[in-house]
Length: 177
Ligand code: FES
Image 1 (cartoon, rainbow, N blue to C red):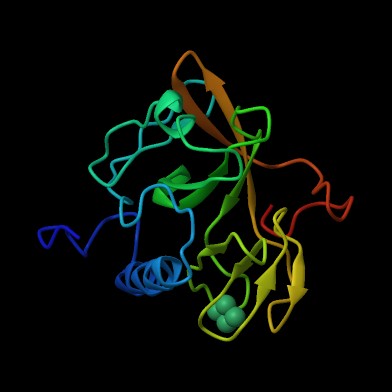
Image 2: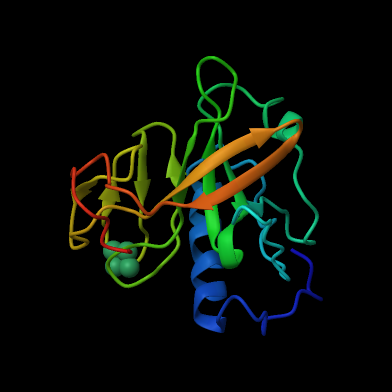
């Protein structure tokens, strides 16, 4: 990882960054299909007139959709999302990006976590919480589903939008709204 990367990023605390490193190390260990190991975070974030944020890499460069879609179905690509939050994007079986993104921020105490492609779960290394592919809790101590964002591909640009309507997993107002 680039040692010159600033820890004092304005959109990410030192704790969040260290959590991210922890999660990424585990991702490699389990052979996760993380698309961009370590390629996260660098603001500033640019927000469009419609409230969209471009998905970016660690250098703050927008990531083309075609770059992620060159990966096989089932790939979880980790990008810098809204306000710099690490966010998983999924390559679907139809070789498009899923319209739902999963924020990489454990709802227990905020650790980041890898995708385990063998168990098909997000598995938090801190206290063992496990989440289904849609972010639903499968094992605690976390007791809330993972935060969602909307993913909208326009041309080759990947735009992320806040999720403010009902959570499709619970049918209720999301906990983060
Ligand atoms: Fe993820 Fe505790 S922070 S299980």
